[in-house]
Image (tube, rainbow, N blue to C red; front, side, top):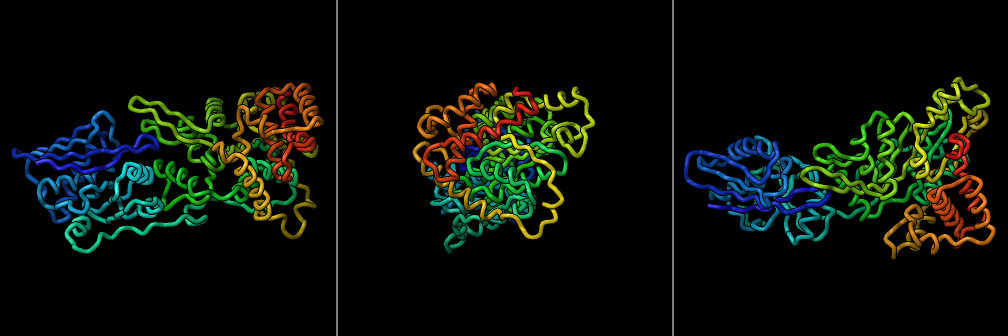
Length: 512
């Protein structure tokens, strides 16, 4: 006798249907699972056997063959446990699927029959909806994650026995209530600092506001204790809220990587801060299962690299492609996956190994060779992809002792939202949402300058020996400054300020 139960697999963020075919035939007790299963799938034999027995059912003493189709795609993880168990119970006539004949089953089984949560529920439910599946049976602890997907019935279950009760009862199935997305309902970003607690640093705050308004990459250079890390951690408080579409895309990435510790949807923009000892695979993604890296987990949010020169050079160089393209492609033997990676890079560094180079109050102890070697860890191509280079000096005592709060993140965020709204309306037909995504002929269409502005930029390009990429980055930042002032065209003062944010590469790197 043969039973077929629908489940789902994942390649990157893309789901695909997996048909769990279970054949039960007379003969000596035997189990075989085929269809390119990995170790976790092969071990489902003992989990399913114990779960069936401990749920009050009888495990058939016969020849059982389980096929996971399509057989040419590798199956990974314990997500097929529930579908396999349901197939065995159906083929041995212990349950009748009835109302759940066309349902999709996802879940890991414990030995006592409990249905445990699994990674990647959200992209699999979205794929099921796209393929016309009406009902998805999922672990109860994954309910908050899946309930945001509209127009599909979500049936959360706690155990294998609970499914049997649902099938045997005449009452309607207990489907989960659909959840509506609201900012603040999901997983919050950590370690957020309000700008009102940051004393002084007016120039750096202005730069962070511009970066947030246009989603620009920014590099903070200054001595230890000047507030670089605090400025970076305050940035998420002034970035615009997520739309539902953005929240879904971000949650899919975090779901696949197992980062959704509390279930639910990611309702706040991510803030990722990997340690400088992180490997290239940890930063950009990879490993045997081609998992998302920090650049993808920061998608839609901020990637903060503290002590930038302390990262391995090859690790930093791996950032160049996702910074330019907005995605990461990972090739493995069994599959090639692509993860989105459009993030704001915020990096901080000292100007030299001791941190005091250029500080008039604290003499630098480093030799010119040590300073040059330290700065050379940041390559010109990577530096060229960072839109704004900001010098952060130590605050004065008078600034620190000043009573009261500085301008709050809320008021800064209001200005940022106005600038982002203008960009969203301007680029609506192009499928982009910020000035940092301008490319090709968009510069000619949306970065109109008057004669004086063009002359100033031409002079800066010549005297500062800029690259074509630097030229475009200045235009992007100038376009954002113009949006913050509600100016349709880029004016001379906007270009001047944008050029100012590119001057430090001449001071520290000699205009490389």
